[in-house]
Length: 493
Image 1 (cartoon, rainbow, N blue to C red):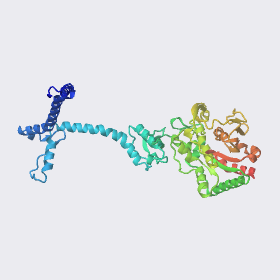
Image 2 (image 1 turned 60 degrees about the horizontal axis):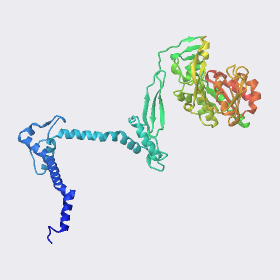
Image 3 (image 1 turned 180 degrees about the vertical axis):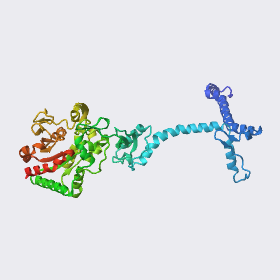
């Protein structure tokens, strides 16, 4: 049978004509040739243009790059086979067409890639690499610190990981915030670790030494509206330093009191509270004063030379004053913030947990300063009261009509509470103990405060049942200290 009339061949020809692949083949070949030609032109065109500029002399004129402010490469006069390749490459690189556009594009692309790396990735990598270094670093945080913190916290959340991902990672502190001090406010530096931990360092206030004393009645007018009691001046300038014999006598009486208390199953110690002018000397008028003073001399002697149960929380007060005002501006006494620092000292001696002042909630209250009454110009100041153990219920035996729950009217103030500690604590002291009445009954279920002036009359009925006995005396009344110790010793023996 003829191939042309063969039915099978006819079907094949029909299928070929109807198959789109056969129809598109010429067009596809044409497109491929065009693409090859365009690619070849892209490769060859720069070289052709470069050669053309050389023919018309333009290449020689373009021997200086204004963008990079330098001469373009010229062939070395001593051209040889040894340096031919590098010379041709350098010459071509300097004169390739569109060179400045290509360089600008390269710089732009580099900056696009560099920015996220420098600001987002590199700080985290550095933090991981330096995780063992605990030294505070003054370098400021990246603007993208929050993102870094998220990455860091994610690392910390991975249990059993390495480096910063472990639970006990070492902190790397960097300066996060800074504030300059002025005459009324401390400055500070806040350092933070990427995990969120932070520490704060305070910068001392400057002292204005050009303000001289003005005294009205018993009140010293200090800087910026602060008032002081004239009775503190002698202590402030450094008077009344005790001699060796007085120091030894005082230590001996305290030691005997401690031994007597321990023999009765009791705890005894004494504490003296710093004067307002001692802690806030920056607002006092300009006066010449000594670096040594009486109570500090007692404290140093009984801490280092002849140990005795005597405490003077001067250092603790100085360390805490940047956190909050510890004394009233218009009064002779410490405020409720200061009482928390005193409470912490009592806790320390008794082996109880310390209280972090800055972590306590507060409430505002008005306070009428006793120094303004001395000026015959009563005024209030608004203060903050830390709320310590507000869940403990406290009941007082006397009302507060005398300002001390009976301390001044009947000589004692007594409190009962549902505190977990069922010991009876007795504090003998002066008006500074009033601020402690807000807190001590929240630690002990039975608390009694005795006015030192009533010690002989009230002490015999109270001291036998006491588990803890504390004698308190403010610095400006320290001349009562040894006298009261002898009275207390007679009552306890």
